[in-house]
Length: 154
Length: 115
Image (cartoon, rainbow over all chains, first blue to last red):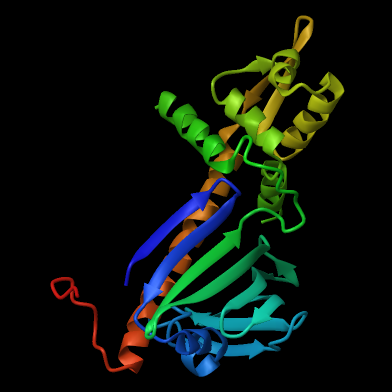
């Protein structure tokens, strides 16, 4: 497996991974509870349930158990193109019908050899409705400046 | 968590990120901030109001001008959230890799056994 991760200037978290597995299997690992329960939750914190209405506009919700508490995360499917593209909104539920910071996740699966699949995972960290007008004053630039700012005060 | 939504909304605009990058170099007046952007002072003031509401900057009146200064706490909370989130997904994909290998009877990755 090779791996890479960065936060690009379009304010998107990008993680690229190559898996030694056929694309159809990687796709199943994302959408089938029997597979997803093996990797979504950390060891010792199994997935309790996974409800997926796998169609555009359909709701999904995963519940993990941690120290006797339910930790639900949920969202809406935005794009589904089996077995290559999956896009959905994502947020942790924080109780009292409140949701944490909402992001848009996009997963691309590309067959790079018969049993090799490249996954490109993107997560927009800013509100899905916000405009993305070019690279001027990008996220990295703001973060770099911020790092310098903190360092100077140490 | 609502604070984080405010922070990310404020940071979503490239002009506002550029203003923050400028303020990271040191405090500045509204006039100084407006200069490089070729937009009017009222337009800049609107951006500054959003940044102030999101608790990313403070504005204070001094003599004839208003001076803006960066407030790092909210920015740090946003950067921390991104980092935590990145780690969550990285760990998941490590487990996905191991699980896909197990499913296909390939055994765990051996660093000394690259093809």
